[in-house]
Length: 335
Length: 302
Image 1 (cartoon, rainbow over the protein chains, first blue to last red):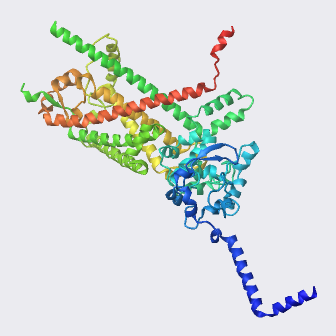
Image 2: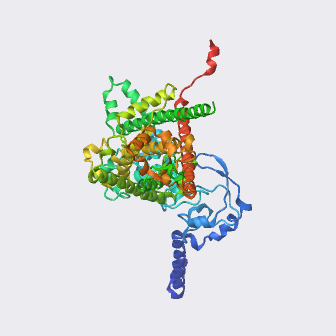
Image 3: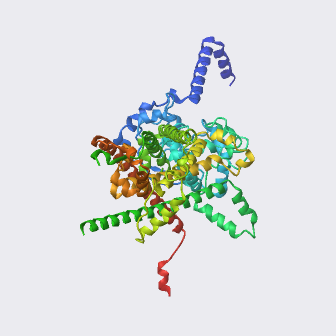
C-alpha cells in the first residue's frame, strides 16, 4: 500500500505525465459540458432523419397512440421540409432530436410512438407557467376537464409537427375554432360582431381581432377579473393595440352581442318569471347594454317583415290588376 | 301630331346623373357589404373574395359611401337652389311634390278598391304614392346608413362623444352595427325586389324602364300611367314644352345594356339573400326544437 502511494507521487512528480493527465481531464470535461449545451456534437443531423422521413413509401402511414387519451390513429410521418422550415421551429439551429430527445444516439430504424415532446422543461417554461396560473386552466382542473397540451392549440394545419408561428394565418383561424369548440355561445356572438364577421370570411390577419387578441394568449383570465386583459385598467391598452386612442367609453363595447342567441331570450323570460323571487336578476339583464341592441334588432326584424309583406302584396296585386285591365281593354277593342 | 312629338321628357340630365351615381354607389356598397351579413354562406365568402377581400372590399365600400354622399349633396343642393333661389315651393307641396300629399291617401284607398276590382284605378299625378314611399325611404335610409356608417368607420372618435356613464348602457359601435346591418338588408332587399319589380319589370316596361337612363317616355305611356299629370300638363299648356325627340335606338340599346346586367345582379343578390334567410330561419327552428323531446310513439300507449 505504501509502495503504491509512493509510485503515485513519483509519477505525479514527472511533469510530462502530469500535463497529459490535466489536458485529458480538461478535454473530457469540455466534451462532457458540450454534450449538455448542445447535442450537435454527437448528434444525428436532420438529414439523417430525412433519409426516411422524406420518403412516403417508408413512413406515410404509421400507427400513433395518443399518450394522454390512448386514442389510436394512423398518421403520416412524412416531413415536408418546406413547411417545416416555415414553421416556428424551422430555423437553422433546430435539430429533430432537440425535441425528440429519446431518439438521441439511435441509428437506423427507431421504435414507434416516441415519447411526447417536452416543450416546457428546457424552452417554454414561461408560457406554460402563465397558462397554468390563469383562471382558465384552474377552472378546467376544478371541473375535471382534460387540460389541453401545447400541441392542442399549437398544431400545424397539415401535420401536427409543424408548430405554426404566432402570426400564421391558418393558426389564427384555427384558434378561433378551437376556443369556439368549448365556448359555443361566445363563438356565435363573436361571429355576430364585426371582428367575427370578417374573420368568418377567412381574413384573419393581425389587424382583425381573434379570441386571443382580446382575451390574452396563455394567461387567460375571466374578463370580469380586474387583472385580465379586459379589466378596467388594461382594456384601454388591449383595445388600443388596434384602435389607437381608445377611450373609457370605447372599452364598454359589447363584443359579444347576444340578440341572436336563443338562450339570451330564454334567460330573460325565466328571470321575468322569477321577478317576485329575485328582482335583481331581471334588473341586471335589462341594465346591460345588450338590451338596447336587442330592442333595435327586434324592431328592425319587425320593420323588415312589415315592409316586405306589405309591398310584396301590393306588387302582386298591382301586377294582377294591370294584367286583368289589359285583358279587358283588348276584349273591348276586339268586341 | 308629328311623329317626333309623341315623346315627353320625364327626367332631366341632373336627375339622371344623380340616379347613375346612386346606382354605382349602391351596387358597390351592397356587393361589398352584404357578404359580411351572409358570412356563413359560400356565396357570401366567394363574393367578398371577388370584391377584393379584406381590406380592399372595405375600402371600395367607403369609396362608394363617399359617392353616395356626393349624390345626396347634389340632391340637397338642388332642393335648396330650387326652393330658396328660384322660390319654387312646388317641390314640397302640390301635385309636383315628392312628399306625401292628402291626395295620395285617396289614391291609396282607390288603388285598394281597384285591387279587388271594385273600381277603376285612380289617375295618378306626376309621382305615384309608392314612388313617394321609395323616395322617402331612400332619404331615411341614406341618413341612417350615413350616420351609422360613420360611427363604424371612426369608432374611437364616435365613442368620445358618449360620456362614460352612458356608455355602459349605450354602446354606439354595436348599435351602429345592428342598425347598419338591418337597414342595409331592408334597403338592398327593397331596391332589388320591390323597386326593380315595381318600376322596371312591370308588365308594360319589361325589362327596364328606360326613362331613368334616356330621360324620355312615350306620351301614351304617361297618359296610361299618370293620367292626372298628363291632363294637368295639357290644361296648363305645358305639354308642348315637355316634348322631345324620341330616343334613338342606340340610346335605348345602351340603356338596356346598362339596365339588364344591373337588374340581373340585383335579382340574383336578392335570390341569394332570401334563400340564405330561409336557411337561417330553418336552422333557428331546428335549434329551437332541438331540446323538445316529442315521442311520437307515445300515442300508442293509450
